[in-house]
Amino acid sequence: MIEFQTITDGEVTLDEIASGDLRVRISRLGAEMISMARQADSGWIGFLYRDGEVAPPASGWANHATVMGYFLHRLWHEQSVYRGKIIRGGNHGFLRHFVFDEPRRIDDGLVYSVPADRVPSEAYPLRVALELSYRLVEDALRIEFCFTNEEPELSAHVSFGLHPGFAVASLDDALLLLPAGRYRRYFAPGNFLNGKTELIDVTEPGLPFAKSALPDSFLLGFDDVPDRTIVLESPARRSRVTFDFAEVPFVTLWSDSDRFVCVEPCWGLPDSNPPVPFEEKIGIQMIPPGGVLRRSLGLRPEILA
Image (cartoon, rainbow, N blue to C red; front, side):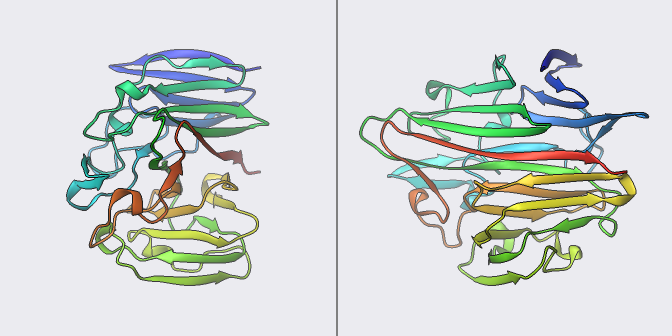
């Protein structure tokens, strides 16, 4: 049974869903998850970086699990050309700054909505609505993006994803396991694709590069990875998060701190240097006229014995 609660923390409104010992809190600013916690004998144990903290830190990365869309990562000079119209925006698109209305309650969670007429025209020129759902299913969190293209004659192009940071005792302590398979790494100096890629074969679960390289984002495509299940453990914190990325085409791995690791499911990639038209961006997702694009991911947090 799902329990719902609305919490006001200063000027921040949080929506809470809980089932058993699993609890998730989401801010209406950006529909950003700011806490994913399990209850233990010692109290609630959070899995996100700065779990549950709504005040910004004195320095460093200030987010918890940024929702990215209708583009993600960066645009060249913070703009792109889409069918002759200029799209403008900073990192990860407008959703992170969008103030959502009260979400709709469903049996197993919450649905946050962006009606097409509330999408800023300078951020995205077509009539495309979004429903973003957070659901507690089988003792895990399921997050789903559902875009509806309301244009009767035009296909629409979007890229989107989630930018969550997970708490670790240290990078040395963190254990990040990519499943076996073939990956394609996309090189992006300065956070812009330069056209260079390389294939990486992972023969057993593990990390094919040093964790010390994580300040440079690793953009990986699941070229031939049969089981897209990633695991992040911090033994010193007794925490594990298992990621179900079966529907995810790309993952970004990043950290600029010794206290967190970002494992980001992405439906799309950053802009290129030199840039290309928005609809030709690598990894861009297409929605047919009047069509729907529905994609999801799963997060299972665990407290280790």
